[in-house]
Structure formats: C-alpha cells, structure tokens
Length: 445
Image (cartoon, rainbow, N blue to C red; front, side, top):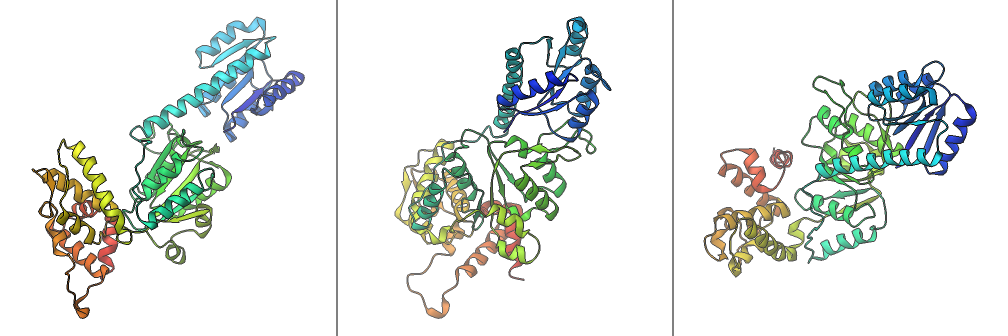
C-alpha cells in the first residue's frame, strides 16, 4: 500500500520542492499552505505522516500537532523549525511529535525520517497480524485421492499467481476453510496475514466492529480505537466463512470496500485504505439467497471471480481411508496414544457411512475413537454405535432402499436424541454449525 504524506508549509517554493522529492521516492503526497487546511485534510482522509512547519498562518505547527493528535492519533508528526524556534520544537516532541528538523534541512535526512515512520508502521501492522493469527500453521496437509478433490487442487494451482477473489461453495464441513488457507499460502501474498471471519457467529453490530474496526467513543465501551480485521489483513487475505449469513447492510459496506479499496471504521468520518484479497465461502445455495433477496447479486459477482465447488465426502469415497489414517496419526500424537492402525472391519464401517457432517464429522469420529481406545488398533467396536446402525446390508430389496437424505435425517435425530435434545452438543459431534443443524431439522417440517 502507498505510504501517504501530508505537507503543511507556507513557503510555496519549499513546499513544492519537498512534495516533488517525496513523490520521486514513491510516496503519495498532499501539500497545503497553512495549518488549518492541513487539519481539514487530516479530518477527511488518512495520512501516515504530517510534515509541518512550526510557523504558519491561520494555525501554527504546535496547535496543528495538538489537533492532529486528537483527530488522528495514529498519524505521526514531523516538525520543521527555524533556528530560533528550537525550544518550540523540543516542546513539540513532548506533546507527541515523532521528531523535528531544523531549517535549512537536509533532504536525505528528511527522507530517512519518513522511511523510519514507514518501517515502524509496517512492523506494527505485521505484529498485530501475527498476534491475530498466531496459531496459524503455514504447513497445510490436504488429502486428495479422489478425482473430485484432485480437480479442486488443480484449479487452485491454476490461480496461484493470480490475485483474484474466490468463492468456495459446498456443504458444511467439506474443508472450505482449509482450502482458503491453501489458496493464500500458495499465492504471492503468502508472507502476509491470513485472517478468517465467520459471519454466522456475530450480531450485525459486532460483525461490523470486528470487520471494519471502530473509533474511540464510537459507542459505549469503545475506549480505544480498534483497527478491525479489514485493516489488519492489509496486503494479505481476508476469508469470510458463511458469507450468506452477513446482514444486507454490511454486505453493502463490504461491496464498497472491495470496489473502492477503502472503508470507514464504525464512528469514523475518514476513509481507511486497504489492499487485501478476499475469499468467501458458503454452504448455502447462493442463487436461492439472491432470489430471496438475502444476498446481494453485485457482491456475489465481486466475490465470484473464481468459484470453486468442493464436493461432499460421500462423493469422494476414496478420500475416506487416507483421511482416517491422517486423523488417526494426528490425534494419537495429540493424546499420547500408540494406536497403530484401523482393523479392516473398522475401515469398512467408515467407508460405508454417508457423513452428513463431511470431513469435520469424520475427524470428530476418529478423535473420539482415539480417546476411548485402550488397545493398539481402532476396531469397528471403537466407533460410535450410531454408525453401525446405518450400515448398508449386502442384500438389498429395491422397495426398502433408503435415500442418503433419509439416512442423514435419521442419523441427525439419533445423535440429537443421544444428547437429550442438546443442539449444541449434537452439532459439535456432527461437525456442523447450529445454523446448519437447524436447517436440517427445518427441512422436514
């Protein structure tokens, strides 16, 4: 992102020369001839550093410094002063100025000070992003034995040098979040932050604050300025999980941010610039959401530069065995178990199941088996008994064959009953969100 510099200098020749030099250095420069105009620029736009002469008409440099620290505390201020005003410059440092330069100043020294602010800003932003995604592992394991998943990975490989927005579709639990990370870490933005936001877990107000941040005093409890994930993800990737759950008002603000590469914090009056890649995911039929008026068509087109459909696990049976073995190794290490492998009967049970919760449910099943198993093997008896209830018989009568939808519904009810109607526990074990579980149950009404 371009580093923005504001110059407040009443001497026109000095002002224009300084602006030209800084533009040649690659900075985005705006210049004004007095302190009041500079303050108005700060109020209406976002600047990284203000270079201000200490003596100016309409508002001097010290008063400008005080006002800027109230209006835009994140903007650094570099004071330029004549020889006779050194004491005032020292006073400016005490009031929050980044540094000062005496006239006549050396241009190389001024550029170095501006570069120092730029480096500090980048480091601060990287540190925030690091804290936000501290537990993110860049090494990502993707199991893809099936043709469907191999095709998905081929598409992702085809856009590795692209910066296009991506829409991931598919049922809950198929691994869209994981694939979003694969897209990011195989892209030119891989060294920058990857941040994820689940649109279904926040109210509209909280989601706006998490996404766009807020200004100090924007609402009760906003005691400090919050940058928001949109700003923290600058130069990186922002992933919106369950994008169709986002409220229409926020959809409009997100669309504007994607189109104009800038946004307003909650309670803010000046735009904040951002350069981020956007990846979104949904487990819903997005065409139906558009038809029902709950999702904006223009936002869909902005996000859907590249749509990638992730097939459900029941359509990629050849992935079940390698996934099961991967989860067995993972959770055996996690729980300090020395479980060697699955028995043939156990793998047969796993391969025949339909997985309404997809890969997430499979992992939950394996983790549960690892926790409970005392011996060196995962057997069929190690698996939840509810799985055994839905094994397909070797001899089937045509009039008794159940559809996968019917089997899934029966299993959902069985799990729900097992937990005494507790939807939170049932959704956790099934590997689906409470919203998805509610939809499964509502479809039967």
